[in-house]
Length: 201
Image (cartoon, one colour):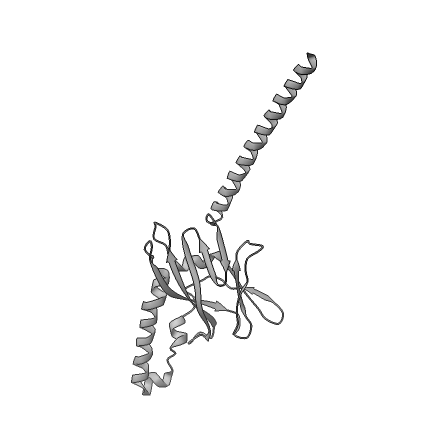
């Protein structure tokens, strides 16, 4: 009889410990989810074959181009990408680029490419204007200005504007890079198994 009582008490004790462990595991999971959200990564993401997928949107890298800055002497990478808003809220297409860690090497070092979207003049690099154009070639000057305005209206402005739910748009963003000789690598931040998407000069 005493053995049965002891056995019963032992079972209750084990069930109590199991319940506590379950509660602790649930609390730990909730805490991790909360910390993940507080870090700005509230939505899981995957990145394969140049396509980023999150709960709210999809981003497809369409093409890229290495360019010289028009006047400031900086080097740039222009990225054209298509964004689909799968959420019920407006989103800003270029904000999806913050999911990426973007790097570039040279012969001795590795550099983080900042997502400072507006620091590189993509239109100016694609359609440069020379002093000669300004002074002696008004048609070339006007053509370059028109092309810059059209590019900014069609691609740059839409990258920083709100995309409506269930809509798709192609946009472009210019990133300031370290050089024009070495590849650029895109991968998901804080991911150990993310695809490395390499863009060659």
